[in-house]
Length: 132
Image 1 (cartoon, rainbow, N blue to C red):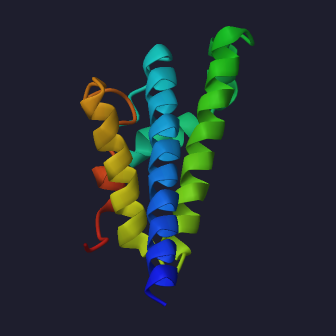
Image 2 (cartoon, rainbow, N blue to C red):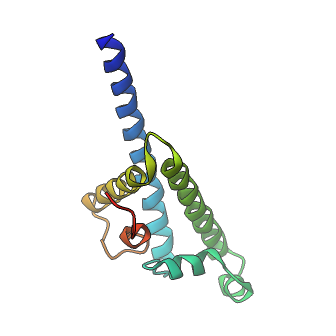
């Protein structure tokens, strides 16, 4: 019996580490793309604007490399949202756990040299109202 519990705990810890690494990679790519595109992503409104690229935005991108980068950024922002939403509704993780995982991944990026003011790095406003 104790071995089964230890195995379950080890598997859960491994899953959490894997999720943190994936969120870290996702956050790093979002920050790099946003920086290259000169998008701030410091507020929910700026993130929403990046997601809703209108005709003027698309015309400014010109259909080349910048357009592909904007498309990738939008896809990654949506993917991160979907992953965090699934984690938040998971009964074993919940909203506080999802927040902690995302912020931990973000802290790992900061430790690797990402600037705290880089686009997409300020995630704390997204979690206002979620208690620890």
